[in-house]
Length: 277
Image 1 (cartoon, rainbow, N blue to C red):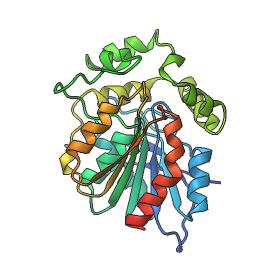
Image 2: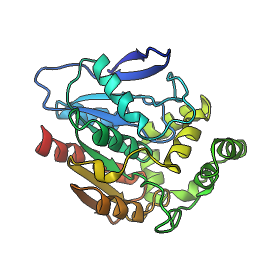
Image 3: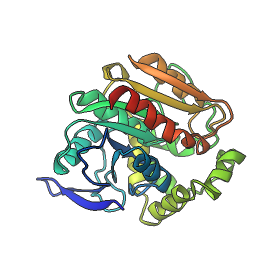
Image 4: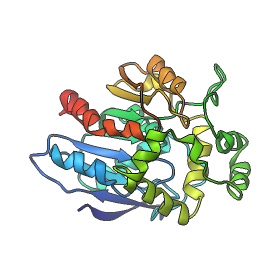
């Protein structure tokens, strides 16, 4: 069972963090960066995989999500200082990051900005920085939210007023995962949505705006995992990351979509342990 700690900043902000607990024998501390939207609470399959490997697992709610103070206008890079502040509050020195979907860019932020602290990352179904070098939206089943986000926070908030979940963005294997082994993810996303749209709005605006760092700044090892059939974050995003990260490995999962690809979490943890543990 993870303990909950509210990390307080001098400006009055709060980030809600979760920690499986310090253990001197832990081979690695891993910070999980949640998807969009999620509450930041540890997901059962992630926590179980970490426990089986003796990994200390930490997660936190990004600004605007459950228990964390909203921070309109934040960019992706702001997560770098936030995650280090969480680590400092928990007495953690060096650690690795893992992010799924909307958590992927934020996992990379700390790796880019604080290489002395964030020693490697795994990105699963993670979106790439916005670029006009290719059609960034191509292959997204429902790109409306991100298209609105490109116009700014006001436009994205207006889109949220009528936004509805479209299950067609998920493959049958994704829907099966949400009904079974990743049911905790679906339930957590519902809870995050019930608490309000601020976190998701600010995530989307951050994704569709300059991130505040370049992928080339990331020098640590990065594992990029992508489902070939992903209709939320298309495969081209993974290819772009692979081409622009200095030290990246790609796992392309031919039969997976946006959710089922998360079944690689245990293997991704093993990959990080083999390089960083």
